[in-house]
Image (cartoon, rainbow, N blue to C red):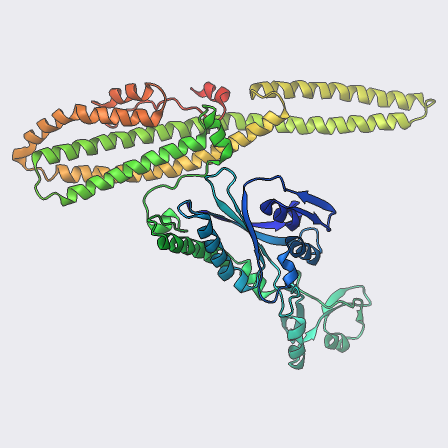
Length: 549
């Protein structure tokens, strides 16, 4: 339920504050900076919009068009950072009025009270994913409601052998302490150097050649801007939002709670799931297994197994009497857990190995394709240039025109050869055109990313396997000699029952017909270290994966 995302609306990325404000509010706004009108009045899912301002801000900025037009006007460069956008998930346990109180309280305390102007909107386009978009200004206001500078010019001044930066205001005091600005001087020999007027006067022959004093490249950031843009501010916002949501839930007597902390920060052993995205979920709806969704299913299964192991350990610690039946059942369930952990490790290894072989096989082919494509592009450009040159040669210069024609003909053959080679490589990649080849490159990148995820999962499984083995051996060593045979007989009797439970679990997790059932039956009465194959998997590209079955 917890989600807190921060983005920068940057002109350099092709965005504008006007367009973002129009989209999140579902209104029609005009941007005087580029002359574009952004009309989102037909956009659905916008439940509520509001603007909150600090006391020094002009009251006219309560109008959305006026506020963000002022922001656009204040920023002069083509890569200006115009606004910051925060996106937060709203708890479905609360009502719309509760969301408003929650958002107003958070935005007022964490943004407006710090000097930012804020424009927020509540969205719920599909009826079960309520969230809020919050746009805040990035340039501070002075006491009169005027925009302050994001940075101040910092002059690099010198005193003796020391150089230090001062703003214009700071330099008034520093000047009295002996600090001087540096200017560009040129000697009679043509050598340039940054000198103070005093240094230039002591060494005759230097002539000042610039009116601008030496200054730091990026200037000094406004302290408020520095704070607003700091990683600490983002962490504070994330924590403050979690606290605000939990207070609202507590006031409404809801048991749900959220946290901004990661699993590692919370000290949890469970693995966090990965973001699936709409594309992966769309594939799943079409009956195609997406790697990210498959990974999340595996992670949830691993976490469930980990919770079961912890529950078994807690249950075992509470048992006072070490009965034969209890010891036998505990050992058998731990044995079943060990088999499942080993199974998952082998599945993990098989998948990672398959992906690695695919990457190692196709990556050089793809690189060859890109190289041929680049050569083809260069040859076509050269051919066009030669054709242009030939057209410019007068008809009477027959020899020169013939020479150019020969070069064009030779180049045409080279181009055809490169096209044939490109087609062959596309065939080897099972791609029809350049777009598919580009997507295939993205597919290989995703496989490498999933390999890293599998490595992290494998490490967790190894730790679970080690802990479970230690627990298994610890219990086995506590069995009294006279009870060994009785425990063994009881375990033999329980084994088929627990094996059926394990088969069902593997079947539910695998979701591939009877493959997991047959595999589970195969390993029920074998040693844990036996090697066996995992169930079939379906990767992003079915056609490519068939080669690695």
